[in-house]
Length: 138
Image (cartoon, rainbow, N blue to C red):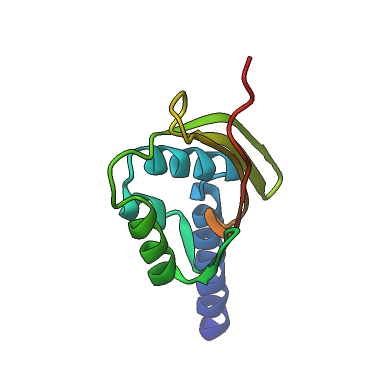
């Protein structure tokens, strides 16, 4: 009887802990907003912290998986001068978030793009990067 009660108590505590952890998880729009902020600051570690351990990032030129590979990707992209980043739009529906952006806005060679994220349990699981051409002229 005592053993059954202790087991039930342990399961109840575990369930309460899991529910508390889920309640504390960042929403997809919060994760994407943090990611945009980290990218704008070229903060590699802050950006990498948004990803699940086995996350996948698909770019037009490569596909990488895991935090170490994602860290290396960002270090390469953000190592040089320039690269100002302006996010134009942020949207999230369910587990999917997206942002439209301009790299080096207003400068020669600026480029537009869109990133789409799948976020689960407060972490980016998949990111797909779409790169367009120069921004449309008004």
